[in-house]
Image (cartoon, rainbow, N blue to C red; front, side, top):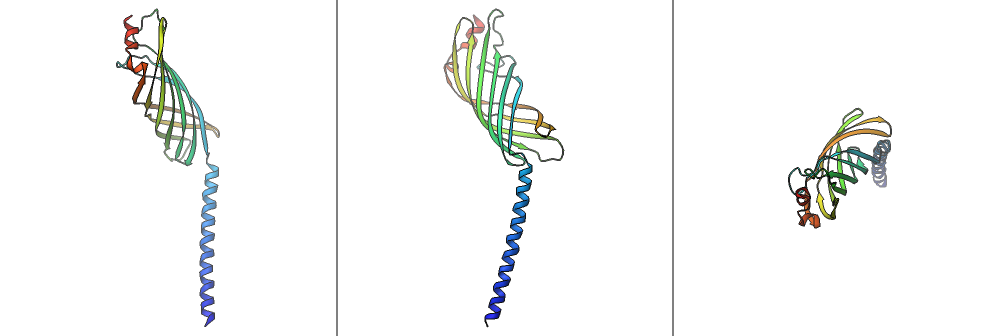
Length: 194
């Protein structure tokens, strides 16, 4: 009577062994795939930035630069931090004065990369960032302010070398929760009218 019980026990152990072997092969396959995929994506950005302040279109196109560092959670999803600095001249400032708005933004973003074959991949991202803004003009005291932004962007990246890719992107960055002197003042308008 003990023999059938023993045989059943061996069959259960055999099935358990097959299941463990399957899980080990599956895990190994996932780890090998994961190891071949870059875990960290970091880079610099340089480009043209358009910002607006209190009046529509009151800032000119400006130069911007930044950096990002992202951790790849899955082959198609990166999450990380970004920094963007831009300087935009006041649109209607008198030609004899220099009046600029400088924006520094630090935030987090999630980037979804379309998993298509090849070296060129489109992507989209959304994030949340904090802006520090400073308005400067010759002959006027600087004023500053802060706000939050939600960057929503799309882009396309092309891998040139194993560790290098070139990308082109565009983003809409609506801002909210404005605080500080820059938000309580008519500084840009006052500089234009002076």
